Image 1: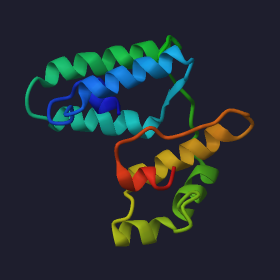
Image 2 (image 1 turned 45 degrees about the horizontal axis):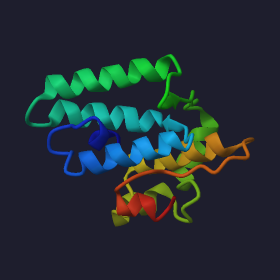
Image 3 (image 1 turned 180 degrees about the horizontal axis):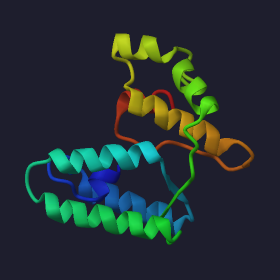
Amino acid sequence: MLLEFLDVPGHNGQHAEITAEMERRIAHNVTFVLPVTTIIETGNHIAQCSGDRRGAAKRFVRALELARTAEPPWIVRDVAWNGEFLERFVEGASTGSDLLTHLSNKTLGSGDVAILVEREQFKKGIAATVEIWTLDQKLRSFS
């Protein structure tokens, strides 16, 4: 969704629809949490895209600056890549399969599994609903 929202060339086929849906969610007081993995993968996609990379990079950097200051529409949550994170990562988070199986069977990549672990960590201790907003059908099936 971040690639679409940022209008990254080659990853922006639904930009208008995603932007409208994001505005609708913001109006309903939805808080968007940017997983660290999403930030890393978005930067990689921008660096490899064709078209106006600089424009996409400027929008990305601005989004990160807003997240750093906790201004809407999103925040970044600190994630500790420690032993606990790596344990859940190798276990495959809450998917029912381990990382080895996902990578071997091409069901999920390591970035997707890391996002699922980040969601698990974020959900601890809060009473709110936490969902992963994605166009990726494989990742969505585990959300």
